[in-house]
Image (cartoon, rainbow, N blue to C red; front, side, top):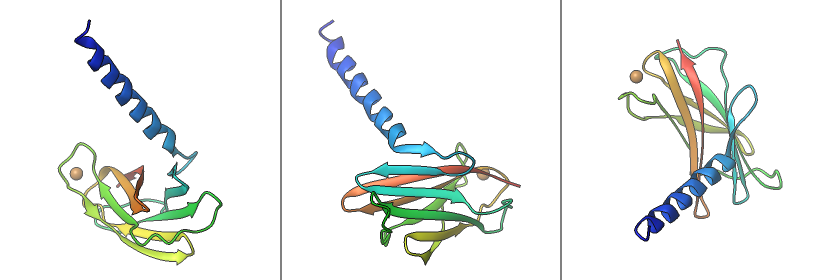
Amino acid sequence: MKRLLPLLLLCGALAQLIYIRIDREQALAGNGARYRDAGFDLRIAADFEEARSMEPSAFRIELKDDTGAPVDGTSLRLSITMPGMLCGTIPGEIAEIAPGVYRATAIPVMAGSWQARASLGLAGVEARVSTDFEVK
Ligand SMILES: [Cu+2]
């Protein structure tokens, strides 16, 4: 039993970490996801009717602080991956189209299930949010 205690404590700590992770990132009804932590509100949503392989897929990313003011996301990045496959991580291009609002594009290289992830490191906080999308 004494040997089990550290293991149990570790499991408890891990469960808590996973819980916090889920709590910070939430799927939005209909389209996209949102991450809130340490004063940041980071959202991503697909900005297309239909994604096609070898064509740019666009995403709308919003970065605000907890008062709703836009945040300059100089370290904001977008990448897309195919979970469970070996297509690698494909980086996207990001342009700010309004204060705190960004349009990001990346090119999925094949049809199937993809995941787009926006991430940034700001003020020592690493924030990331991802959303799934289908490519035809
Ligand atoms: Cu693939």
